[in-house]
Amino acid sequence: MIPYILNKEHGVDAYIVSNANGDYPYLKTEVVGLNHVVLKRVTGNKNLDSLIFVFFNFWKIDALQLYHFNIFNVIILNLFKFLNFFRKSKTYLKLDADDGILDLKLRGVHGNFFKYLISKIDIISIETQLLYKELIKRPYFNNLIYLPNGFTGEKVEIANKESFFLTVGRIGTHQKNTELLLEAFRRKYTELNGWKLIIIGPIEEKEKDFNGYISHFFANNPQLKDDVLFLGPIYDRKLLNDYYKRADVFVMPSRYEGFALVYLEAIKFGCKMLLSNIRPAFDIVKSDKIGYLFSSDEVEDLGLKLIKISSEPIDVKNNLYIQDFACQNFHWSKIVDELYNKLKI
Image (cartoon, rainbow, N blue to C red; front, side, top):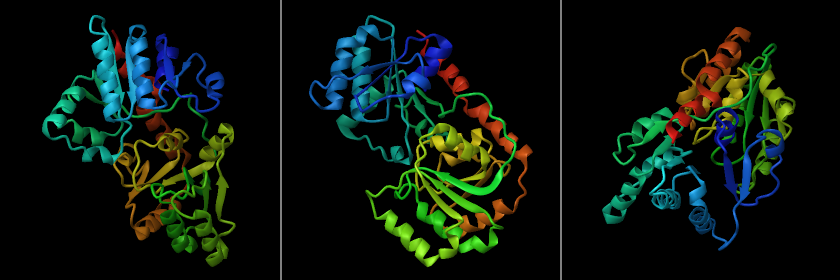
């Protein structure tokens, strides 16, 4: 979205470079004007192939943006800066980080050299305010800025909200913690005034037999079959947006996240938020008018919050307040405006 908005609203000749990982249909529908370059598999190692791409193309590029914090990205950005020694150019690293970045330990000669390389990157951005406050204390993050993720598009009309909780994500992973939500809903089911739970997303089986968990859950709780609905992945954007538009409450019980895009999709449609109290959630839930936080390891806490938020009357004015908050703070146009001013060469 960043290169797309730079192209659409600021006239930047923007490219995204990636491996050939399949079709990219959104290039023709959602991000028209964004150029796509397929990274050649010279060595088969994506880091080395990225270095080779920069070495042979640096002179065509005014600003280079990479995603995620790792040693190869830091090296590539510094190589680009070195090769462009006689030209004005900018480097930008989008951290897209979760709490794990706070565990970064840089010691000794190698650590000090890595700190030096980090300090030479022109712009480094972090998506959450609490992580920004921690990282900015480290001198080598001297060019760190707070730049959240965002959403695009005009305001959507909000008319009728319905009495159901919605969650969207990779269902069944340790990260998403879906079991906590199911157990909390089960325990407080009789106190939820007929609210349903709608779960959207692919069921992941890499970490555990979650389909088996679901079967066991319904076998022991047959009364929930009509009120806990697993809809699977929904790739039709209009259909998915319809669920956001209708849902009064969005729930996310994650154990950890970077800055989850589903947060933004939900508040764009004015959903009240019920989020685990991980760092990025504090950027969203600024007051009780937006929603509530709960502990990601306490079923009872989530259960009580389910009761609390479902007992509040559906109030479209409050949903509109949440939507306005989203537009003021997380619209990509405003976010990229700030970045563009820093990238100007």
